[in-house]
Image (cartoon, rainbow, N blue to C red; front, top):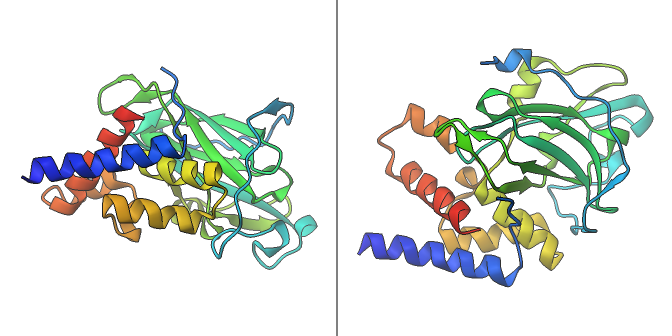
Length: 239
């Protein structure tokens, strides 16, 4: 019965994903040593996509207390199906659809980037890479929209500390990809899209955007985490 219920939940999520036309798919460093990629090109284009702002997203001057010209903004994160190394990381401007920054993930899917022009109206896209849990190529695309809490603000010309990069880290997973695709395709806020996914997959907020692999390593007998991991892996296989 539990097996059937689990797959019914996943099938419901997949149906929602198909309706919202989401999830496009293509076929040891320490975190402290991750280098920053601050060069970028704005000549590449993604499909135009904007997301209505909600309480977790904001305009440029509303991120932090300093004005745009007095600060620099950074993001850090982890790409997770299993942990994905050597994956492409792209920052997409949600207003223009352009790729404004790119880099590559290191071990455990870690990446750090400076945000061009302090633009917080962006999404993060992860493409390809090697799944460290299987050592096989990952042939999918993952995405997420950063919340205000993920942005790291420093004085102009400064570099965040390792502690700040770790504290503000965002994750990019199959679950966040479903949220992102619903938000972009239906032009609803991320908050509204998260509610849809939460209701279908029965996942609490604190798990919807979590590093469930790291948590499972600490709590291998946690049944709730095990179910979340199964849902994420199954969702990625079908999307």
